[in-house]
Structures are given as C-alpha cells and as structure tokens.
View (tube, rainbow, N blue to C red):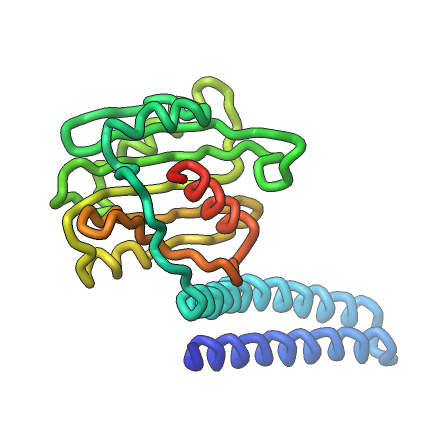
Length: 241
C-alpha cells in the first residue's frame, strides 16, 4: 500500500504542478503587451497541452487510487459467511428466481443467471445495471475463464438488440469445493471495482468451502471502495442468507 500511495502522491503533485504552470503561463500571456494574435495562438497551444496533460495523468491517478482502495479493503476484510447450503448448485436456482434473476446460459461446466436491474428509487440502479450470477460446476474452471466471458458478452449483445441500454455491470462468479486453498483465495481476492467514464464495472468472485460451510469473498463491514461495490456485496449477502 505504501508503494501505491507514493505513486499516487507523485502523479497528483506532478499534475497539480503541471496545471499551475500552464494556467500561470496563460494568465501571464493575457496580461502581457505581446501582440493579441500571437498571444491567442500561444494560449491555444497551452490549452491543448493542458488537455493532453489531463489525458496523461488521469488514468495513472485513477489506477493508483484504486490500488490504495484495494489495499484498504484487504486490510479491513470481513470473515467468510457461514451458510447452510452452497450458492453454487442447482438447489440455488429457485433463490435466484425469487430475486428476478432469469436463466441466461447453462452447460455442464457453468450456469449463468441474469437480472436487468433498474429502479429509479435506488441511486445505484437508477441507471440500468446488468447483474450476472455465474455458478461454476467444473472444479478445474477458473473464475476468469474465457468461456464465461464469451457467454456474458453474448448476453450483453442480446440485450442491446432488445434496445435495452446498460450503464453499469455487476458480475458474481461462484464455485464450491472441499477446501479453500491459497490459489483459490487469491483468485477470489482478484476483484474489480472500476469506473470507466460514467460506467461502473464490479466483479466479485466467491468460493463456498464445503468442509466449513462458509462462503469466502472479498468484502469489508467498515470500508468500501465505492457505492457500487457495496451494492454488490449487500446483494450477494442478501442472495445467500
């Protein structure tokens, strides 16, 4: 976390310094006795340079901001949830249907349920959100399997063809097994809570350990990187309770 914080501070200070220099130069030019046409030409160049600086610094500042948030989330991580049944088996289908999820794809390897969420009374889903719940049946399949990604993209394209606009995404990928190994724990800790322009993309991976009857995923009761991630955590808790 210290390294991420250091990088964040470096780029933030560079951005502020760069902006002050550009703005200061523009102000100095505007009050100088230089010919107006020349002044305006130089100001235009400086404004273009400032816009270029925003495009250069913004993604770097955002990346290190998310890194800091991730480390804070890990530091304040909550314990696995104790459950009576696995949320990655066919027995869980009825629960998903009760919460308006619909079947999207099914095979021997994995099953996908989808929910096109939109509610003007709830800020997080005031704009349409596609909520995906993936159950992995094949123990050797990874949370980031290209097969899963392909089917999610197919469902997304089908919604677009139905003229349904999607602004935000929340994706749960859940599997079960006898033991929560270090590799599986690390895979579950690989989460996403990115903002791409005005679009939120949340991905939460979860593992149900049969031996302890508990569900492991990355969440915190005292910290959240953003409201959309908290919505995802709260929704998953509500589904599996």
